[in-house]
Length: 497
Image (cartoon, rainbow, N blue to C red):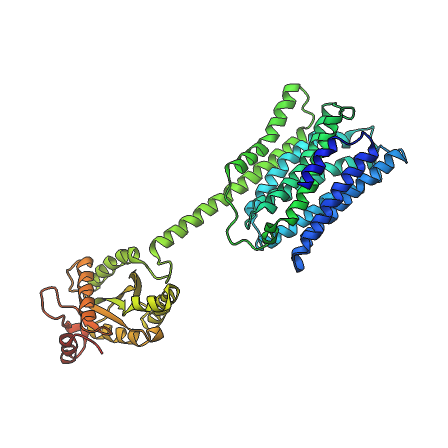
């Protein structure tokens, strides 16, 4: 409210360089004080970006006092003036602060954001070269130091704009402080651009009080927004490492990048229409850089699409919690395993496994503990399975394991080892079914599931061997090489204790 009141009253003060300078300096130094007070709430490295902002604002505001003294007392108005170095310090200081802020928000490099910032800056840089930098360089009326100063301002604006674009494309919190910093940097750019446009159009507003002071008010708004950003509570979260990824290309950002990319052909068209294509080399260079940046951005987008497609493909076949194959992957793998067993004339078994009393465990210890039990159990079971065996999560607390080439006896011993390593003192029930050589994968899974329910009904913590498809107990074939008497006991008694 104080900032709005002070900026609004700027139109009412007397028309005197000393009055105007004092008012601008008061608002500028007030913003510096606000930034320093806000930075006191932070600790360690979190203060450094704000100190950079405060230094840039202080230097720029001090330049106003030097400029007035230079003009009114020393009568030095032609560039370079003693005030120009102070004015120019704003850009590297604020750019350094923004760079430190971005580094803290995104410890890892965001190449896509860098390309976007490069595209935007290159397009506007070409515009600055044609209408500001080029004329200053080629002018015979301006002294060398004066030309350097004239060039330094648009370069500083481009540097600030590049860092602002990079900040917008970064991840992390986006509270009021974030947008006020963006607004402040944008106001500095708009203020400088306004003077450039008016100068190129030959419009002198020094004699028009309301217009002249309105342009000055753009810079006063820029000062105040930095102070407001530092004092706002959301400034505490501004430099925290991003939890969420950087935002995707929004419609306004995509539109801005499109406009920036079209600046080069638009300038060429304007100059061809006017019959004076005097900036051909610059336009060719700018067009080439913009084209390469657009191609690089397209390559990044294509890689991102491919990465997401691979991730979707993986997630569609992998359980997110245990990283085991999921039910979809199992339904694809089992028919292939049965076909291989048919071709090679070898046995194959599957076992349906269910953790005992898992709901009670969840209710007692909570769902995070239940998730840890599932992941730890999956890891423990995989450690005792053979390399050829495939463990998958079937759903909930149910798992299923493929045991290719395993006889009934060998499969029972594998499951016994898995039962013994189940973590946290928990147990499981399991149903074991051996393929008969002709049934479908669905029928085989149904037999294992039925045996699992029998194991649970019989008291849990056991493995039940499924009955053969024709109603007889599953007995080993002659190639199992197991003592028939021992296995018949296991099969008829059902549970493996």
